[in-house]
Amino acid sequence: MAFPLFTLNELMDIIIMVAFLGFIFKDVFKAPMYEAPDDPEFYLKTYNGGFDWHGFKFAVLVTAPAVLFHELGHKFVAMAFGMVAQFKAAYIWLALGAILKLAGVGFIFVVPAYVSWGCSSTDASCMALLQSSPWVGALIAVAGPAVNLLIWLLIAYLLKEEKIPSKYVALAVLTKNINKFLFIFNMIPIPGFDGFHFFSRLLAMV
Image (cartoon, rainbow, N blue to C red; front, top):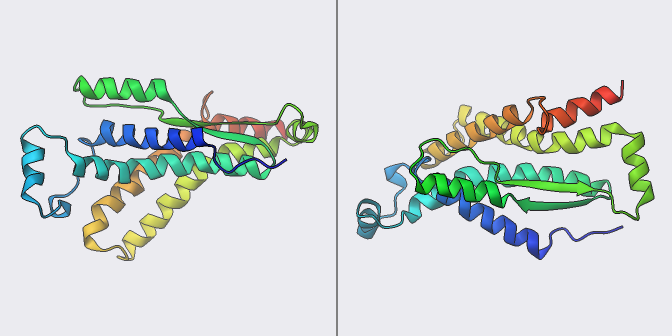
């Protein structure tokens, strides 16, 4: 059974998630001053209480790809096995993050999105596959962290080989570290985490 790659609701959720991440973390991941636009109004907006759009865009570039590609890893692997998989913004978490941001809380942790996946209620072959082949669920679970691992290692290599222009090094270092964190954190084998779903399904195969 064929499913659309993205629904309109998913595209809206992606846009909303990206916007919230930019707002929540715009003062956490600061853009280097040499990346600031050559515009005197930038400094007026930054230091006179205006909204820091440059900081917002930098925070989006640092955080959103790591989260989005992680979730798309789950989604596309699930869809490859013929399952229904939908990206969803975690509105409660995002709202909580925005409230904490407005309250001036320094450290903010959010789960910005997730992918809901499974078999269509009429797809008996899909259900049989999941029941008889735990490795399928394990592969879907590890797909998200695997994307973060690949991004982490790729950027680490490019930094080591000095393949990244100097003006993008700060962005690359932050991107590398966020993907490293997401990989390690999500692979912790405790209930609710990708690592738990991955390792529990592997054990089911023994």
